[in-house]
Amino acid sequence: DDAAAVAALFSQQPYSEHVRRDRKLHAVLVRAARNGDVPLAALALDTGAPPDGVGGTGVPLCTAIEARHFAIVHLLRERGASGKTMTATLRTPLMAAALSDDVRLLRAVVTMPGAA
Image 1 (cartoon, helix red, strand yellow):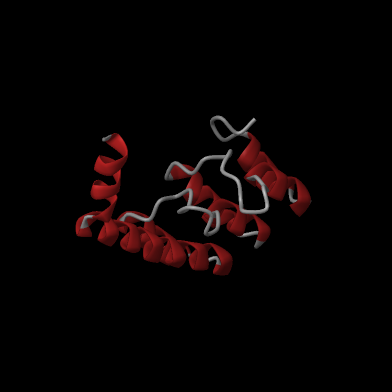
Image 2 (cartoon, one colour):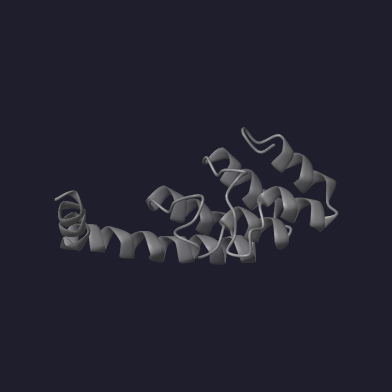
């Protein structure tokens, strides 16, 4: 049964540890995006934080845009963040940039691959 095989795979300890690790790294990345801490964001990404977030727990790119931290936006773009990721409230990075009234942020998002 495929469902049983998938459930068994997800219940394995290594998978659970991997998810917990990703969530912790993601929390560090979101905090760095909120605070404009480029070295911490780079460290989180270097250590394996997913640039687009983990399961509705915040989108680092939207967080950086809303906090107007252009250097973090640039770093996330370089590391492969998607311009199409949505927050839990269905806000995309493009929407966040448009609402920021900051032309640099809007340009950064509009020029991302696949953002439009």
